[in-house]
Length: 193
Length: 263
Image (cartoon, rainbow over all chains, first blue to last red; front, side, top):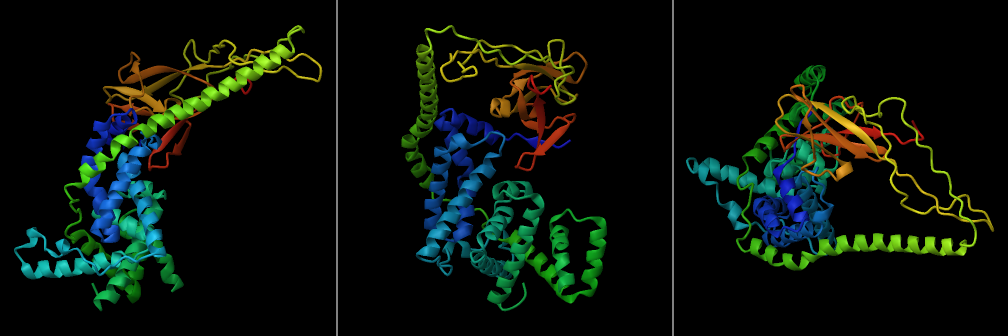
């Protein structure tokens, strides 16, 4: 017998559907950081991530009636964020390009938890930086699945729901994404991982 | 390379789970002899490790962003209401047009004696309503409840003959739903018959410990449904003859309520 949690966020979203603005604020508080992070990793552009996070939530609010309570609210919201990222990507490809060299200085600061070993922290920060850069060169679907899996820590089932693909295809997507990432990483770093 | 290509899918499941035992043996054997595949596997594992160790996975949005988003909400707050009103307005408009047409047609044929079309035969099903094993008809199950005529319908219209209003019978069937689930303290049923309402229709204890029941009044048709256990766990009906993926990684049970003519 398969079990699936009828998540609390869906119940809150149901309140929003009935016109409860406070309920939407609760969802905003919970998902603002994950959505912002997803978009940030997608574009590596802080200002753009702000705009697109705002657009994601405003679109979610505007179209809250189309949310089905059976669905997980998080996957519905990430689907909106993903679609907004794809739209933006198309727009950028037509016009300007994403400046992947423009690195946010914040991310160069090493993680405090690794302060015991400055050398290791430095290596990890360097490797992480290369990865972030090459991630933005991946095709959209691979980029989305990798960010959702490794950064937003969504499950395979949740990613399958966001991407509207099967579970097995989700795993293949992640695998192929990492394979591309590996090739790009080797090219960029001039050697093995 | 074709030999290696066939291992890609297996390698993907080897890394992310779901590989069969015999596939795993074959892959490990292949990895022990194929340098390029072994290098790929090592590389993928290293990338996986790097991604997991990456600092700053969740980034803090600027503190003003939340207020900025909320500041834009009030004006949008009207949109759902407009859409709801828009839908109702469209439905009311359609009903008004139909009513007007019916009146015009009726007045046009007023001097003639109206002829009532025979209503579709009400057929009582020979057996239980073909619903899942847990949805069995009780003493009153599969009962047609003719509703009052809801809409005027032309009866065999022919040129120059009377067009008369005919009562259309709306068949509503009572379907008893049973669910045996001893660990539950509360059970409800929800589905597309109630817009997947998170509260659902509550089931009551059916006498026997762990057995729950309720009665749904449904029009003939196919419905997706699941049980809600203890307010937040969706459980498909283990006895439903038909199940289908819900498109979100879960399963829906299918309830088929047959109409009068098809029984």
